[in-house]
Length: 167
Image 1: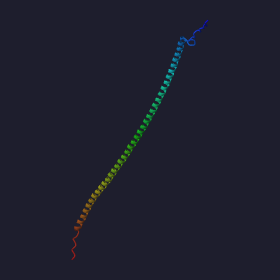
Image 2 (image 1 turned 180 degrees about the vertical axis):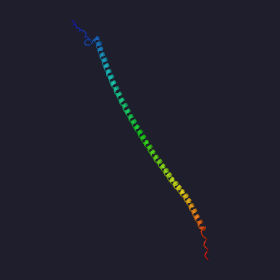
Image 3 (image 1 turned 90 degrees about the horizontal axis):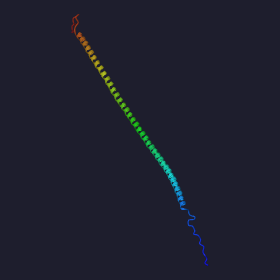
Image 4 (image 1 turned 135 degrees about the vertical axis):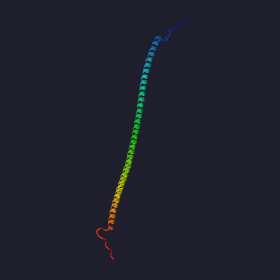
């Protein structure tokens, strides 16, 4: 007799393996989990992107505000410098006006003084002229009186004969 070998039933190769339905279910679960992770990661990235945009926008607004402040400061400084220059020019103009007024007043005072001096000299000359005319008139009158006295002195008297000459 030949020993009969007992054949063992074949070992199931799929025994501890998941079935295609289980794999499909597992695959669907993983896909759902991956989709969920992708969605969450996308939302996180979108939130981070939004935050990054907010930070960039804040930084840009801050820089714009700083630049506006710097430009405003420059404007204020330039306006102040312009006002200062205007004030200096106004002062120089007022100084020139005062100097010109002083010069005009001095010229006017000199002209008035010259006029008054010439008027006084003219008045003196007129008084000298009037005095000279009065003097000449009185001189002529006195000369006339002198001549009359001279004529009287050379004429004889009517009451007596002239005295004979002494010999």
